[in-house]
Image 1 (cartoon, rainbow, N blue to C red):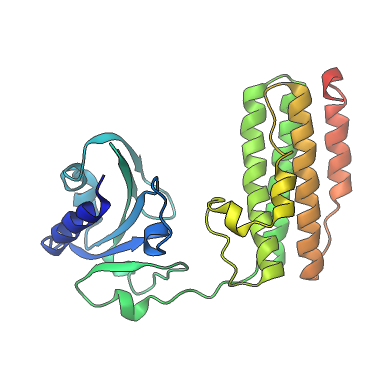
Image 2: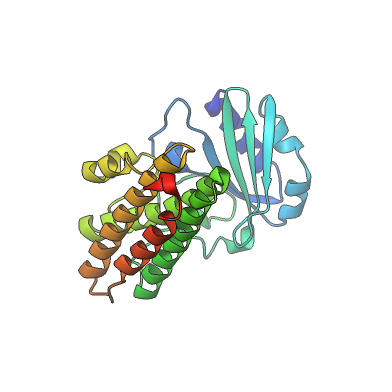
Length: 268
């Protein structure tokens, strides 16, 4: 897919569509950090998003479509993730009246701005460290997933084990991001969903993560779970210590996980 041509076509379409008020390129392309397999993230600000969401023609013309993910995305904005032969576009459709309150935390490129609202109102947001209650909530979510993962291992439910492990990993990634920002400063870019982790994530943490994934069998899954919660506890403790937050009793949860795992003869 020729992304320059695609963006040019999309830009001209937006300029000629009265309903569309602005078009903004975000993601790796806006940051000039693209990989040959990078997609393009584009936000479309419309007076009325409904016609765009009901009509496929404006993105269907941009290439040979393979599959489409139509995301309603509760609490955010509807999106169309369109996979073409040779490329992918992540198209988010947003009400134009939200422009005055939208803020970007990462680089962006204005493609269309009919009302002059984007550049004048969109400044890089000031990041902030997580509040004590937010850290506590994330720790609780992570350990809830870990406890259920342990139960799935003992029940010999490998699919459920992987689903619960994924929930634990999501919480672990958030803790890793916070840990880096606590130690390296709020301007430290931890990216999104672990992307470019080889560039921003400290080598010792990358090394520890090597032990945090396993195969379907109980023994391997148990080792991965224990490695995951060990890293989770270490980084969570480092965060709460650095921010002078109330410490969490990790050992108590770990003992319960060990007690559950002990019920499976192959998990020891």
